[in-house]
Amino acid sequence: MEISPSTNASARIMATFLIVAGVAHFANPTFFDDIVPPWLPPSERFWTYASGAAELAVGIGLLSQRTRSRAAWAAFFLFLAVYPANLYMAWDWRDKAVADQLVAFGRLPLQFVMFWWAIKLAKASALPVASDVLGFQERK
Image (cartoon, rainbow, N blue to C red):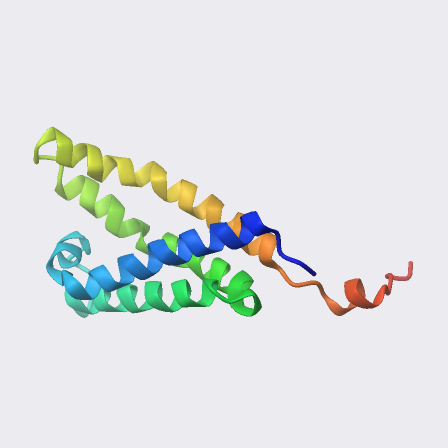
C-alpha cells in the first residue's frame, strides 16, 4: 500500500516538531521543569527528561513508514499525557503578563489539534492487514 505524499509530509512535520521539542527538553530543562506540576513524583526534572526522551523516540518513529502508525498513536498518548502540564502552566501563569497568559492559555486548545492530527496520521499510515492484501473476505 502506497502512503500518500501528504501523509508523508504530515509525518515529517510532526516528527520535526517532536524531535525539536525533545531536544529542547534537554537543552533548556529549566523551562520545562517549571511547567511540570510539582506534586508529580519523583521530580520535575525526571518528567522533563522522560517527556523529552518520549518526544525524541516518537519523532524518530514517525520517520519510518513501518513504525509510523504506532508512533502516531504514541504521539496521541504523549500529547494526552503532557496535557496536565499545559493545564498547570495556564494556572501557574495566570498572574504573568497578558502575552504570557495568551501563550499559556493558547496551548490548551492547540493540544486538541495535536490529538486530532496524531489520530489522523495514525489512521492514514496504517498498513493493510493480511486479509486486505490477499483479498480474503470475512464469511457471514
